[in-house]
Length: 282
Image 1 (cartoon, rainbow, N blue to C red):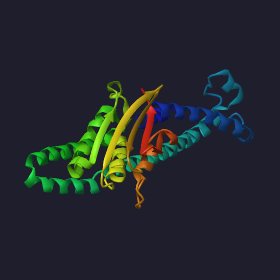
Image 2: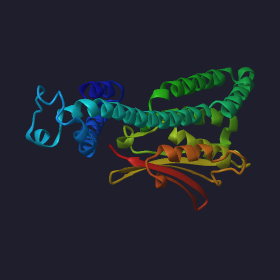
Image 3: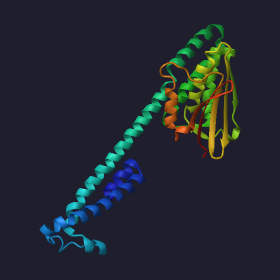
Image 4: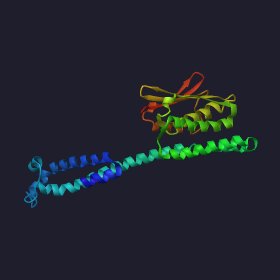
């Protein structure tokens, strides 16, 4: 049993080690109690029962030494298989979740990179200084995406800085059509939020709420604490979500990353659309 505990603890942590111990102990008792009537008539007291002590009054009264030596290793093997099966299932779920998050992160690259490079290409000759600044923004964005591959949550202030670089590149493309307002109290900047969650909402707001409008519009980002919950919201003058195939996939993935289905809200408001998510304050 100690070997099973150490093996599971090294691989999966102390919690699974205690589970393995519990399964092993419970199963050993169940197997021996249920097989005792079948084994004792044919074995009698056995050659081991005379020389091998059994500790504990309950075990001495109810169990036979021969049965312990016979059924114990079998149950330990079955317990290992059970724990291994459970852990493999958890590994598969974790791998699927990580794969979905990797896809979610990678979606920043295709159309956004295409638009950013086109903007930089146009600025190189007409506004080289602005082009240099935007190139630095683009480099920071992709560096942060790579750094966040191992970080499921980041401070809200860090997420805001990431979004500001993103919006800076979009403003270089859309010009005065894209206006941004941020209302986030300073005391909330250290609160942890899912990585890239705010960027997803902002991207949808720009792509579907501002860019299609000839007059453009304002993207407002705000956050507030209510009790032990933090709400982060993005408002835009459009509908927030487009109708083309694949629209909403990132939002669906974000909903899965949040703890409760209701933690992501999409709603119509006066003059536009609001997308928000809430997480527990720590």
